[in-house]
Length: 74
Image (tube, rainbow, N blue to C red; front, top):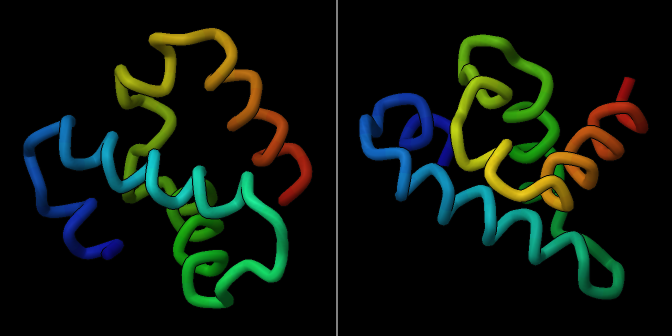
């Protein structure tokens, strides 16, 4: 999934992948280990340029939620 995120030039697919991961963590636990590791890597590793994507900044609620997750991971 990380390879697809990196190689895809279409922001819509990256947005869908992010949405699916985020929705998975909003529901009750347990969270799948692989999805958790994937999401953490996506947020932390600068090579994915996750924080520069337009869809992150479209809705303030999403931005606040993702910033909160990033802060908790640090």
